[in-house]
Length: 452
Image (cartoon, rainbow, N blue to C red; front, side):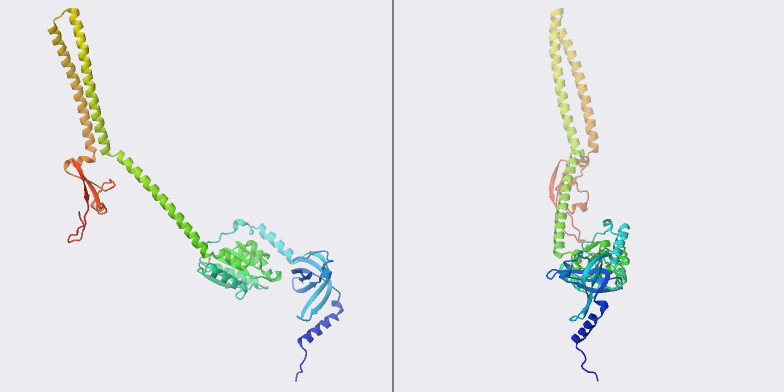
């Protein structure tokens, strides 16, 4: 039968004592890469991990040792530490307590990452010109993330508050660990193949650099760059930047911020629709008003060149010419009589001829002059009558002389048929000798047709 055994505290203490008694762990020199560095300001202590490609260990460097350090470490720095290993008995956590630190060159992982960045940048994958615009209102949004992470709930909450009407499809995938890149690549391919998906959000909540390292995978970065649907990344916190952030169409600071970028606010959409509607109304009114003005101008021009107006104008011009011609002939006759009278008196005085003979000669001259003037007047009247006959022949008013009538609507447009007359409640009928105003009345015959 088993006894009570050790308590957890006793077990941890045994392990801690065993580590302290191991000489090889009391003064150890270790080289590795800094990760998850944190400077605890109240105490001045440094907390970080030291890692290589296969393993990592938690480290702490107390304030009395950090003040003498020759460098301020950052994630990715490759350093060599002198210290000792102990187990923190309360948490059962083995840690390396650093006493001294010196640089050992750029960390291999970060060096590889920088090399990969330069390679992808040279290929143009970071070029802003290849980034695509996001739709104002996506038909459907795919969320590629862990199905159990806090990032998913954050994005769902934000989308529900801003625009709950946009459908969401969740495509799960691992967001941490060695298998994460392959799973995320497969999830991206599934997401872009879904019908009506306009945007993909690739997201993960905060974590250490080691937790986010899968998003620096070259294959995943190329999958994001080659995705047929715009990709928005929201990985870690605002200060975290991974390789996929550089190739994505839009980089958001957090998963919540990614949702704010993709899902429009309902109030903003309503205001934009209102403004667009008001602008469209103004544009239509402006076009309508301009069209009415052009119609009125064209109507006035057509009236000015109508055969009726031209006939009226030519008739008035002919009458004026006749009056002027008659006046000119009368004036010519008076002048001729005066000249002839004066010449007659001078001739009679000079030659001493008989007054009766000269008077007969004057009468003959006057008759000849009158005949020529009347003949010119008759020729002018004949030309005028011929012109008037031609104008009347082409005038639409000529039909009125044969007993027909013209029907106009209230705006003065000719009503060509009965179908057009059904739309006019008032009409003006023009006859040969005048016009009358008529009002259309609706009556029903046995066959149900309306007539005047």
